[in-house]
Amino acid sequence: MDPITQLTEIFSHFPGIGPRQAKRFVFYLLGQNDSANKKIADLIVELKKDINSCTRCMRFFSDGQKSSLCNICSDESRDKTKLLIIAKDVDLDNIERSRSYEGLYFVLGGLVPILDKNPEERIRQFELKREVERNTDLKEIIIALSATVEGDHTAEYIRESFKTITEPRGIKVSVLGRGLSTGTELEYSDIDTIKNALKHRE
Image (tube, rainbow, N blue to C red):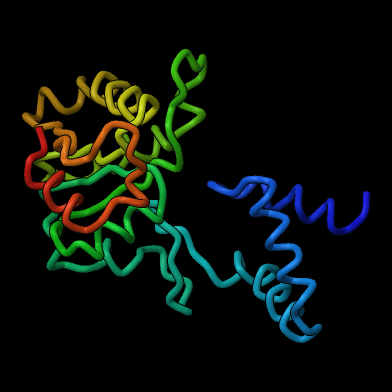
């Protein structure tokens, strides 16, 4: 298999990227000089060396000091009574840009497909349980997942899985209001939509 085909196949596995867009990436790289492509290659190699995963919210972050907590989890001014659950890091970035939420986060790392036989292997369920049990100040869990079939299924799975923890402690479990249209990916939602979804959560 030639390099163009190999790279096209690799890029086509990126989220939201199809074969046509993947091939555009390859031809873009072919149009760059060697130093530009080397810089990209070096950054990819170094990526995981310079990036940490927060031990509480599980998001990726970089601070140059190999800290165990990200800047959000280590910020004492954040509202520790609220925990917002999202599927991926880019969702967190989008919500932070909306400036409509000041609590803590947890990144699930994915969604649970319907009829999946091992849902606990699809998401960070055990890490989430540890975080909920650790936070004695917690009063509300906000499930902020995309308004898709998989997002709704995952939200219901989390509700049911954590009942034995949330109900005895009186922790409210809410989902985003339907300011989000059905089928909407949280990553691509505009700031006003996110604000409304957070404000009218149920």
